Structure formats: structure tokens, C-alpha cells
Image (tube, rainbow, N blue to C red; front, top):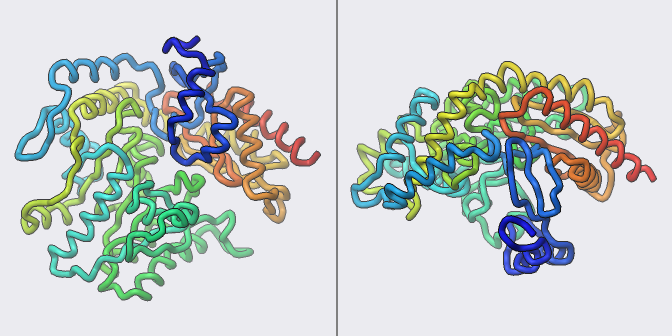
Length: 457
């Protein structure tokens, strides 16, 4: 029995009423879900007592680790004082006011306004609506096309899925939001030409955005949206030449730059935001996940001065918002979470110690494995490409079989990772130290050995 008083079998039976996200429900009901019942530090535990080192920080979000009593206390205190009040009708509450001020303190200099929601999907919906509204206020309503990228992920609402470059999601939309086009991603491992340098590939990938602008006409293009690192699409890290060229192109054609930092925000890359890591000046930055370390659902859209000034001076009432926008409990937890990250120096640790160490361990202990075609990382965010042949970069078929086998063996060995196609990805809590990274590498290495033996059998 778990602390809930229910056995695994009872929970799995009740789970047949629960529609899970991104799940084959027939398969799930045939096999049953793993029931995670407890977390402490860097570890999660299931109903059978299996201890798993969490290499995914929940879902890219539990940056300060599990079991933080301070965060539970912050939520409880706010619930006792004021569990909820809305931010409509010229009302507000203290927690979101103070959180907005804090976010503008740590954000890039041109980000001085914040809009709160509860998820990254909501944040990207808001950003899309705000960008198109901006151009209408500026007298250019026809400037409403948004350029996005294949493999990009911006949420699973209708607008978020439309912005995302995931064909399987588009196939289920039966009609995406119009005037969104997708171009090639900066994914050199599969898309670079023979002999093409990383620098040249980065420029070519960026210029696919310029080609799309020219094809549509700059007077029709509102914005380009991209993640600094394509996260859910497989931790695809662009070459150093990519983002400077994207910024040059956006400036040349007066196209707004929408940065999706739902995954990379709040320390993942060794700075508060990946915009600071890569030197990107954006017009909007969408954030969520690690804003509360997953202890409460909250998103924050950071709005640049150019858009905000027009909205305030010319916009009148902005007919947009959610019941739980600026929820006081969520914002109180976020404030305490940011305090913990700052107080414990977690971002400096990622930038100066654990991030570089993870990169070294991957290159020295994982990259040489016969199943591995490439390793790559920034901060505490990494991918391992799986191949059947290192020289040709051929994949095992059917597509994704190697990823699923390595993932399953890793979990069996006590390491929670995620498979994205033929890649294994990791984004652990920022609290990991060198010993934890070594332990993860041991468990991943064993998983690679087991998967290779099965794949070659």
C-alpha cells in the first residue's frame, strides 16, 4: 500500500478513467502506468519502492529538486492568507506584483512587463495573440504571418500545436491556425551537408528564415518564433553562427523575435535565461516549468518594451486573460523558488561546474560507445544520438526502436531519461553534483550496453 492508502493495482484500475497527455491509451491500459508516489532530492519512487534518479527534472521543470518544504510552506501560507483572487477589474494581489518585479530584475534589460498564465502552451497562445495585436495597433494588420521551425515545440493547444513543428500533432488538428509556416531547424547531425562546417550550416539554417520572409513578403511577416535550444524536439543545439544571423535577419525585415524559454528558462543553460547564454535580444520570451520548479502550475510571458509600449499607449483594453492568470498561490511559490535558486547559487554551479562536467563526462564516457553517433549539451541539458553505424549515421529501424530500448534499460537500471525518436535526452535538477552525474553516466552506459546487445541479437 502507498501513503495514499491505495495499492498499485487499485491506482492502475482508477487510472483507466484518466486520459493521459501524449499517450497511446490502448497500450497504456493493457500495461498499466508506473505510479510515482514520492520524490526526494534528485530521486523519485514508485509504488513498488523502485528508486529512480530523475534525469528529466520531472518534465524539464523540477530545478530545485523534490521535497522542498520551503515551497510547500510558501503555498500553505498564501492559501491561509488568500487562496485566490483574480487580476481582472483593476484588482491585483501582492504575490504576482512582487513576482513580476522580480522577473523584470533578472530578465534581459528590454523585458519590463509580464503576463501570467498557468502553462507554456497558454504563454505561447498569448504571445501569438499579442504579436498579431501589436501589428494591428501599428496599422499593419496584414503583417500577421509567423515563421516557426520543424521539430520546434510550443505547446499542445490549437495555437501551440500550430506553432510547433510536429507532424503527428498537425495530423490531429484537422486545421491549424492559419498563417504559420515552418522552416528547417538548426539540426546539423541530420541536416548538414557533407563537408559543411558548423558555422556554415548555422548560417544556412538561419537563412531558411530569410527565404520564408522573402517568399511571403516582409510586409506580411509578423514574427519568427524559436526555442534557443529545441528541447522536446530532441535537445537540438544550434551552431554559434545561428542566433546572430537570425537576429540580423529579423532586424533587417522588421520581424519580431519570439523566444520560447519554457524549457530553458530559470537556470537550465547556466544563466537565468538562455537569451543571456546566447546573447539573444527578443521581443517576447515565454517561460513556465522551472518558474515554480513544477511545485505549482505557472507561466510568465515576458514582454519587450517595443510591444509593451504600443499595447499601453495605443491598445485600450486587451481582451485576453485566464481565470487563474496571476494566481497568488502559484506566484508565492515562484517567488520562493527563485529565492532558493539564487541563495544556493544553482545557476553559477551549472555554468561553472556541473554543466562543463556533464559535457566532459558525455564526451569521455558515452560518445565512444558503438551505439552513439553524437553527444551534445549546454548547461544541464543533453542529448545522445543513437545510430546503427557511426560512419554513415544510419539509424536502427523501425524508427525510434533504439531510443525506446535504451530508455527502458536506463529506467530498469534506476535512471529516468526520455527517448525522442533515436535520441536519449536529459535535463536533470540543477541540484545535481559531479557524483550524481557520474552515477547517471554509469547507469546510462549499462543501458547502452544492454540495448546494443538486444539490437544486434
